[in-house]
Each structure stands twice: as structure tokens, then as C-alpha cells.
Length: 77
Image (cartoon, rainbow, N blue to C red; front, side, top):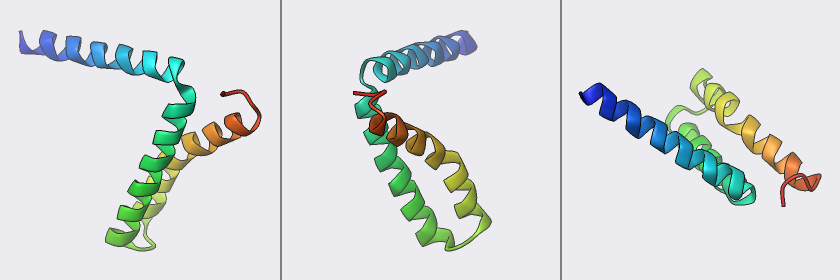
């Protein structure tokens, strides 16, 4: 029974996140950029120049860069 509840919560959260992403892409891109900057700052503080910092950069910065490019090209308004 717990697995069904967990799956329902996961599906509900995914659908809610999808609605927010589709309806407010500029806000989501801005928040994602802020979160990426904070994560990078914390990783820099904890690890310095390291594979962990590089991994965080590879994971969190491509969506931010893609979103910034979409905003600059007026794909997101």
C-alpha cells in the first residue's frame, strides 16, 4: 500500500511541476539559475576545484545556459 501512495505522490508532484514549467518558463528559468548558482557556491566552498565541483557544473548549468539562450532569443517570454 505504501508503494502505491509513494507512486501517486511522485506522479502528482511531476504533473504539478510540469504545469508550472509550461505556464511560467521565465520564472522557472530564473529560479533554476539561482539554485544552480547557490549549489555551485556551496560545492566550491566544500570541495574547491575538484571532480565533485565539475560534476555539479555538468549537471546544473546546461539547463540554465539553455534557458538563458531561450530568453535571449525570445523563445521564452
